[in-house]
Image (cartoon, rainbow, N blue to C red; front, top):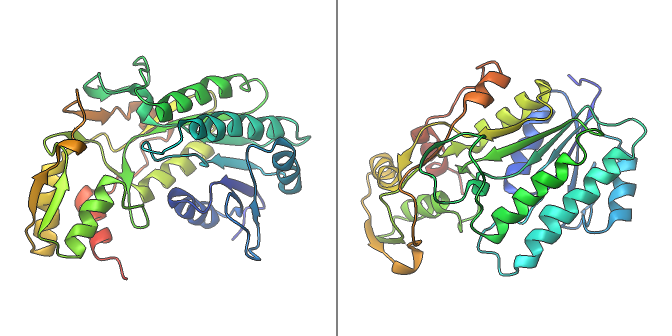
Length: 300
C-alpha cells in the first residue's frame, strides 16, 4: 500500500540507511537513495558526490522528494582524515539543503542526523537538548557546525535535527564497540581486549532508531533538535554479562590501555522527554537483551 509520496534517503547503503529504507517503504513511501558507491543497475538509487553541488542539484530535481532523511556522513570518529568530516558532514549537507531549497515543490519534511557526540565528554548523567554543546573531536565539531548551518535554511525548509546516542544492530561495522563484543562471542573467542568496561552508556536498537525518525517526520516536529536514545544506561560489564548468559560462553577481558580514553565520563544517557512528547509517547523501546540476542543469532 503506497501513500503516493517519495522519500529520499542519503547514505542509503550505510548501516542505518538499510533499516530506514525498510521502515519508510513499510510506511508506504516510494524510497529513493543517494550513496557514494556505484549504482549497479539499482532502481531508485543514484551515486552522488555530495561535494559536487551541480550533481546534487540534478539528482534532487530528478526525484523531487516529499520527505528527506539525510544520513550520509563520515561517521567513524577515528577516521584518518579530519578534513573529510568537514567536507562531507558540513559542506555536503549544505549542497543538499541548497538543492532542496531551490525546488519548486519543496519537501514537507527534512530530517538531518547529527550526533550526541556534540555534547562532548564532560557532562555526566542524563543529557537534554538544552545542555551546552562541547564537542571533543573533529567529527563532533563537524556535526555541530552542520546543525548551525542547517538552521540558516529554517525559513526555507521544514527541518528536524536529530542527535542519536549510541545505537547498534545487525550490519554495524566491527570497529564499533557492541558489534566487536558480539562477534567475539559468536566466534567463541577466549579473550577480548577492551578499554574501560565500568562506563555506563545509552544503547538503542537501530530498529527503534528508524521508527523514531519516521515518527518525527510524521509529527512535523520542525525547528526542533531532538535526542534519539533509549533513556536508559547499561555498563559494558553488563553487556558482556548478557552475552555470556545468552551464549553460555565466558570470555576473559583484557584492558588495553590504548583503548582507555583520558577523562572518560562514567555515565552518559539521553534525556528523551522531548522525543516522547513530539511522538506522543508511542515509541516502543527494544530492550538491550533483545538487541544482543538478535545480533548473536544472526545467520551467517
